[in-house]
Image (cartoon, rainbow, N blue to C red; front, side, top):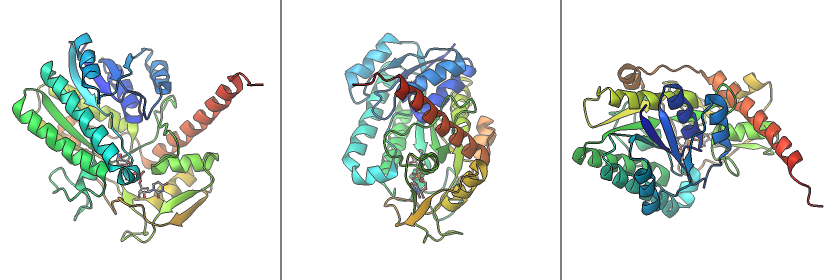
Length: 351
Ligand code: WQD
């Protein structure tokens, strides 16, 4: 049973990927310093899979602590690297925090992968590497434009570092360019848990709908798109998760033709912010309370995927449509609220 180290395993995409790996017979360990996550999702993994996944509470910026994980687990066959900061707007405001966290973590991890000759490495990249593309949909060969945010720049640099690493080392690497991961595991035992005010669209929608946020703001309606709002390729997080399992298996089966290959993980459907809101309203029966405000610095106008390569090469099959993305996201938000109410009732009263 191949052992996979998932970094950021307590996070949104990491936790969903761990479930998919376990369901496909892999052994999994996690490393997560819980700076942007909690161990709450580890409980969800255990409830779904019946397995307790060990999480190393380590900051990947600390090389010695990271190395110790590999010394204790010298049978790690693959690493899937999710752990990174990922909010476009925050990265514009805090560039050094993003460059330090995302780049130092990656370099430390690759040093360990090299030292322990780990055979496979899968990297959580992003459609933000395309910047504002001249043509959409984008393929893996679409030329990269300057990143619109420091976050996007960390993904462009991360990909370059891994390509150069793969050229000089035996470790076979895959770069997965996610579009916009949304939704929750169909069991509603896993989902997105943004700490603090949500940066991303769908948690902003669901938190507004449940009353955690007073009102949602649409960042700009004067873009050159069909309805003036930004266009994205929203994709269910469980579909993204399965692509990681398929990628590791693809490398284990030695089907890769190069030592570093890249795949777009999107549905191939472009959806605007207003269309996403409408889909949520149809699924939930709620009229969302939102206003239109100014554009958000760092936002790309429009991007969506040509996903042919991942479908044909990895055998990737997309299972969820936009309404199911919104339905699972909304059901998850309601579950978190119910859990919080139970947790608050259990908290010992101070007086
Ligand atoms: C989507 C659209 C906003 C919030 C994300 C991740 C990034 C990467 C790509 C994986 C934009 C608008 C948002 C709100 C809004 N994912 N919006 N009001 O910026 O495309 O990037 O997907 O690697 O890590 O951050 O996603 O959800 O933040 O924004 O109008 O309250 O929704 O302006 O047009 P983004 P997002």
